[in-house]
Image (cartoon, rainbow, N blue to C red; front, side, top):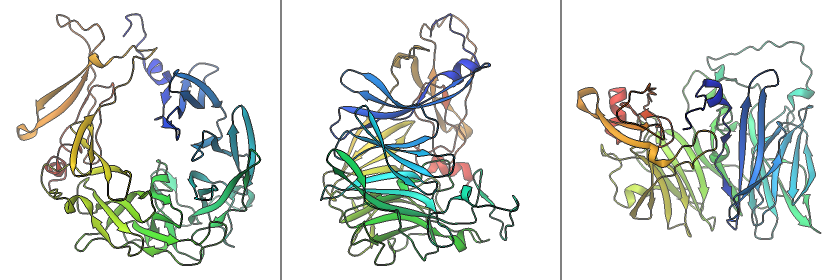
Length: 448
């Protein structure tokens, strides 16, 4: 890094933070967000939505409005859609076509986690997460007058992460839009996917976007859910996979959601990362049993049977072995028979394709304008830990490191047993408990 750069807390926090870039359908552009913190009398937080031309590496700002969220590519073209939260609690759906922006819908309540899916007739399904009011319609807390700010909870479940449970349940809401004469037109009001139900999508209270917990196909929706009455009681509940068939995305559901069956002998746990196969005939998701340490099973079920199979066991992998690194995410490839899944391996991300292992994929940040990072600054070492188990570490040294000199250093420790710190610019050892080093390594953290 430059010798005259002030390596202070303020300098580190004010360095722009960029979200992963999402490529357009033709691979020519990337959509991403940038968050920048500034200090001083005029300090604040700047949140931007930006688009980069991947050929010229030029970037343009789409929005710097702090109330904008959930920017998405419209499937099949290079138009962009995003949601904007209004002061009155309502939510605008805004389309970006070139240099023009158009509000095509204003929903009557807060909604988020926008997901879009292109139908065979060219229309696009819109799906969001929102609260359900007493009459079954979208619920807007800001339009409701309360005589008190107090809440009474009848169970021990008062909050999830740092968010208080709502008195209302969340649901998935959907409608369609269509391109007419060069302009996107909304198909109608949002419809409740789970009317007259006790089911609530999972992940709605977690800090992460619950979008990976549901997916859309031509003929239905798959999602992870919990029963509100159970998940907010004194009984520990886990998420379950569901599928609901739809005859049309312009009308309410004609049937009740159906639970996807787990393979025989597989215990309860949490389901995530839901995906439909390209033809919509299969549903894939990752199921983590409650009795395992960071272990996940890649399950796939046919929509006409809803009986899932363990893909990794089927292809002969020993998913219970001490050296097994469970999948953390996956994608269907060109058909429902081919799957690509990601797993952690010694701080890196490993991609496995079909029945054969792929190469370890490493994504190192380019040299930044502030700190001048480069790949040759990053090294890896192993040190002896508890009972001489090897502990993998990433080491980040200054760009002009001199082995004859002494430097101050910072030790950042990861605990576990869930997740791991991957290859990034921070010096980071992984002590016993991180994922990506086999199941035995994670189990030692919990002494199981």
